[in-house]
Length: 379
Image 1: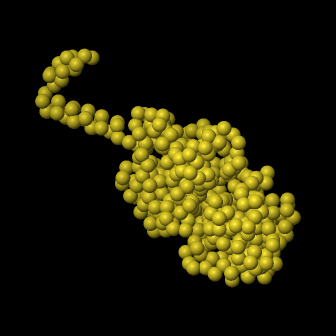
Image 2: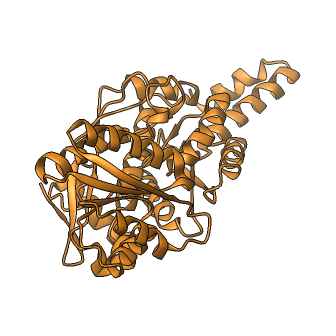
């Protein structure tokens, strides 16, 4: 319709109705051009910040890429980030604040303990949250608003227990775990112990500590070495895993070391040094993947942030792209949960991601070790 025709049409409308119509059209135009807000929540400060910062960077890259291609339905995507300080009292309030600020979904949290604390709020607000690196079994098979693009820890625990007992012939192991991320570590420990002993091995002693306290890892290492295990499994952050390994070696321990995926960052190499040489981790992230999709991501990430993308960065990139793909399919935030569940599958960086009805997924695992100060695949 030409402008004259539009004006003629408007001229026949009563003044009060015309005002209402123009206000509606003005509001509609404004809404259609406002950015789509995606939230991020994770530990961005403190000793565990390397995990949160890497994940935030992965999410940032995904958003920058879609904005460079025109955004979603002609609208730019904006990220609002919140620091949960790795505090179970702070994380739920951070989620509420993001919701008040208008986010349609949240990437995060990063650790299992934080995820357990925010899921009730996520359900209350009906706000989709995608935890890129959360592995606790406590959130498995629940009809809620929580999703994760990686399997629960029971899958990784079973694989590495098999590797330790059947492939490495280890009989007696000791375990060290951090109670400050209990939702991750106790869940991991339970499945590791059950599987390892199911294969005929024995967990001969277990030592706990809290990363929230000042710790004497020397005493902890002495307790472990005194038991004379065939191997030691550490369930802790990358920094604490590296420091514990240092103390174990200083106490003369020469047994092979194993750790959970929580420690799989460059901080492990930095704080562990030679003490973590040959340490083995079971993971869902292959840093040495030569496939085009991953190498392109890796190159772009290094160019943007001047560092190699850790598993937190890669999984967060996938989590963000999953949300964006679902919104591309159906832009209605109220339908986002169902859109994610209805997706026939999503081509992630290293896996075809398909959620079951509980928002859980499965994917291939990798055994990674440390050789000459760098991560390397065992298989």
